[in-house]
Image 1 (cartoon, rainbow, N blue to C red):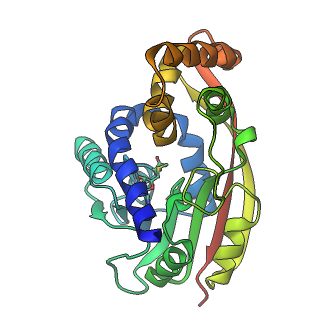
Image 2 (cartoon, helix red, strand yellow; image 1 turned 90 degrees about the vertical axis):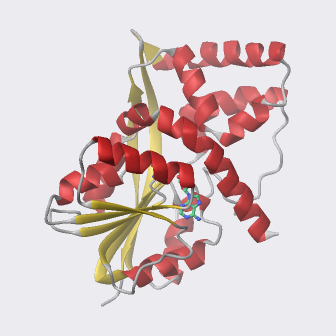
Length: 282
Ligand SMILES: C[S@@+](CC[C@H](N)C(=O)[O-])C[C@H]1O[C@@H](n2cnc3c(N)ncnc32)[C@H](O)[C@@H]1O
């Protein structure tokens, strides 16, 4: 059952990858504050060897490749073939030479013990199929004393970038009871939940902090509708259950409800994430 679920999660990301590729530039811009915070939390500097877990269409790997520079190295990983392809192509377009790409899940990393100075995951830990195994595996490949840092969404209500659509869609497609431990965007939204797991898997100096930021992009409300309903498998699946008139009604209602987050053709949603970090004991 668990492996069936893991396969479904990966299949959904495989479908999503074409849209994350299509919107790569916007996603990079919207979540740039997250990349900066993760780099700061993990204390990434020039010359380091950094592992990115669940790197999606390329971030934070592509930014970190610039930060670590020619004397450093980035190892991008993601279990979704489409994501690896998108990230690799973007890296080639940018002419980066200090980055390599691996198609693999966090639960089974093809690297020797003590290989990396640092490991990071931006918005990926909540999708791990077996979180404890994944965290142990990540700690295994980090050098003693090395840092790990994960960035996950805080509660949905604090993130209207999600809730403004969910609240309206739920009126048309009743929400199913959520298993709060199943892979999903808000699985680690409860403060302390991921930090406790990280501590239990043996990391030291475990910390958690909240980061408030604005999800900003130069798009209007109709482009927001397209972006969100393409990026999210949850939204795509629910919308597929609606007849065309209902889709139109949901879209109009969402654009109306979201209007407050748009000014002069630009989007700005107040947003919140948690950053959970720790160190591999020496
Ligand atoms: C929300 S996306 C985040 C991508 C990217 N890090 C970003 O912030 O733009 C989540 C990513 O987690 C990846 N993922 C899903 N299951 C995973 C697993 N078991 N191990 C590592 N990554 C996983 C997905 O393929 C997807 O690319």
